[in-house]
Image 1 (spheres, rainbow, N blue to C red):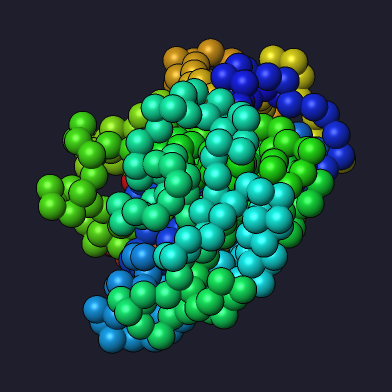
Image 2: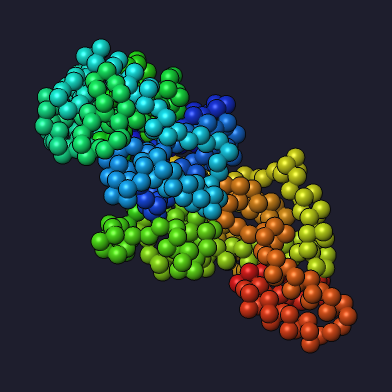
Length: 474
């Protein structure tokens, strides 16, 4: 397995080992997560699932930034206590993750406001080691004290301009490149502050992540992830915190996802091209289509140009895969009415038993894996699926049983496909389907046809043949 390491600017082999720890920069909870945020989080979900599929035990931590300039300002504008305000958007973020089928089984979430004490300890340690200093408005990191400060982002320290601290109002620091660790309380902060050695105040953004990583993973990280926009200053400054206090690298691998554009423009509310998951659901798209598009349309290090037409194309592509699954299921069995759980589950469960699962060097799953193991090349991996589908419809022989098992295992990673025995029928269409079976048993052909048409109006196509009944979503 190989990943592009932002630290070395090279594609590197990831070591085979039992366990992997990963830290991901999470959302700042002052608004709903937008699709640019979610594209990065879905890249991280793909990374986690791919590592698990390859046998690694994964421990993943993602932070929640619930204290910074944006959260304070937004809470005060709405006249809501900070933690009440951020709790609302934290809950909405978790709803997005649930609806988009994120694998949450290995992930722990840390709120910045729960780690103020370790942040204060870290800042004091940096002061004691002469890597930081106090001024009238805060405590600042002395970038000149860290010899390799600019190396990560490929920067010349002498050329770093004001703004590295994340604020345009830092006039008391010694050098433009220095960044804030602790912001002393100002009137505009209202009642948001914590007591410290340096008086009332709050931590800087970079200190939040650094302290949480240092607290959770004192021996360092295997992988640190985030958007490419975080490489400088955020990740550069995180790294400086941790490595000034330790002889160990903060992380062995740094993986960064590239920007998302909308209609070839930067996404912004002022341009009217700003989308959240809710906006896309309101436009008639479902969660699986959104997940499929954001995760598979482009390689994580390639900009994704989001368009509504592109999302419609993903919807059609996903239906094509789901219809193919229906087609190969039809080939697998001649059992009538196999979509009903009681008639089909036993067969599929036997088929998909873990100890019965093997794949050859040229199987769909193996070819899919070769692409994912090459720096998560998901477009290449999806190409293997569509090549198999195209071959099937061209009449080229494929191993139906193993292809079905491969797709089911691939779906452990993608989690977007529909398998008819699981969820192609909802409560309404299941009832219509059952009534149609009864009508056919009673040879009430007109009622059978009426129910078939009604199912079609719900997006479910029924096909009758001498071998039984097949079903697909359209």
